[in-house]
Amino acid sequence: MKISQRTQQIAPSPTIGMAARAKQMQRDGIDVISFAVGEPDFPTPDHICEAARQAMADGHTKYTPASGIAELKEAIVQSMQQEFGLTYDPSGVCVCNGGKHALMNIWQALLDPGDEVIVFAPYWVSYTEQIKIVGGQSTVVMTDADSNFQPDLDEVRATVSDRTVAMLIGSPCNPTGAVYTRRTIEGLARIALDHNLTIISDEIYKNLIYDDGQHFGPAMLSDEVKQATIIVDGVSKTYSMTGWRIGWLIGPDEFVSKVSSIQSHQTSNPNSIAQYAALAALTGPQDCVGQMREQFQRRRDYLVPALQQIAGLRCPKPAGAFYVFPEVTAHLGTELAGQRIDNSLQLAEYLLTQAHISTVPGSAFGAEGYLRLSFACSLDNLREGVQRLHQALEG
Ligand SMILES: Cc1ncc(COP(=O)(O)O)c(C=O)c1O
View 1: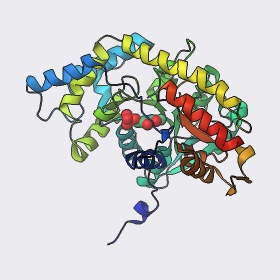
View 2: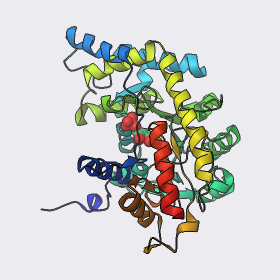
View 3: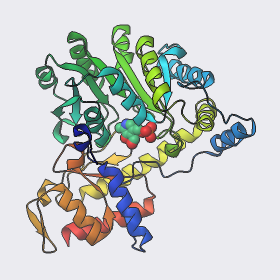
View 4: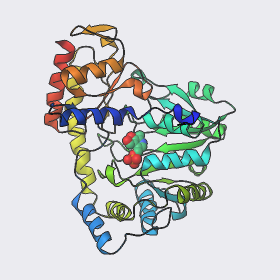
């Protein structure tokens, strides 16, 4: 059967692939510790589940407006106002089937074939594949652990070409957990304004910043930058609602109305019941968010020093999200238990088959020489995983 050329270039998501392999091994009775997952391990808070049950009882089981129910859009703009002092009209919001879908909608509305988007590596796996799906091109700017994964602004400026139309900022970052400093955000915004680029700001991890750090997004810089920015957010990570599939984008009305038209033809509204659950998440008690953040911070504070003690791992402390991204180059080009390890994929394979720990190779994120480990698992599992890692890498 014919497969389009564009589709042939698309790789499956390696993070979902690795998590699925770990699950299959677990089903086969193998005791795998999964460091590969990209979702909080907490249950969705009760009051949110209850709102979904109530929505069904109230008959909210039919189509809604394609871009989402008015109450949810209102709650989204109110939370932007309260948390960050950013004023938006509900018409600047489109509620989508998760943040991933919000991003996909954006590329469809923004990019023509051959248009370029500046993407910072290590990047979330879906960014570059999504851009390819619509015929766009990613121009990748590398960052590394030495600079705490902050991009070099001169390099970014030099990367802009006459085909560049957008810049994609993900802070806090998946996979590194890095949070961009205000200086970085200012510098990137300056470049974007100078070259008339749209800024896509993926803020899905904005509520998971540790040590009293505060989220700072480009739209908070000035009205001019806000007008050039589209924010992507959702309930998945903040409220442990990954399966409910509710995310959104916020931006200039004219752009958002085009996105809403696309969505009306592609998927119609996101799940009606899940929208009411997301409404309860945003308008209900927020202490669950702080409690989950505290737990993540406790795990991070255990994991980072523990990994730093393993020979050949260099592990920067992530300021946000729930991933660590240790550099593992010292183990590449070596043999472990008689097995040749030349790259991060082979190392991840080795750890899965020999030590029964699933991780994601840095190469999946455009950064060879690293591994991503998620700490969205219990402290007990983290301890056991670290011990296995220790044995597998040091013998
Ligand atoms: C960086 C980043 N952006 C966006 C998303 C999308 O999340 P969702 O589609 O569950 O809202 C994810 C999920 O893993 C992510 O890691």
